[in-house]
Image (tube, rainbow, N blue to C red; front, side, top):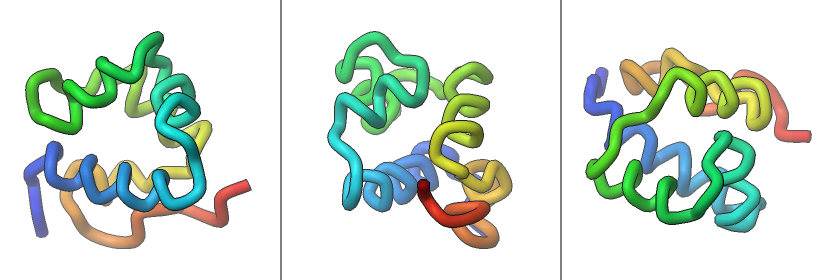
Length: 79
């Protein structure tokens, strides 16, 4: 298991980026700018509860993967 949330979030981002534009990912997480997304990817900012909740709701992200690195990235199919 990988308890490094930044590393796990980067893995999630790479998967989302395959089918979504950066702006859509940022807005889907509740961010108003892509800079907020990049700061989180770079480890300069922490993920908020609001962003985690939005990722689960809007992108079917598995929160267990985000926090522990265990299991599948997605809970189900994207859209």
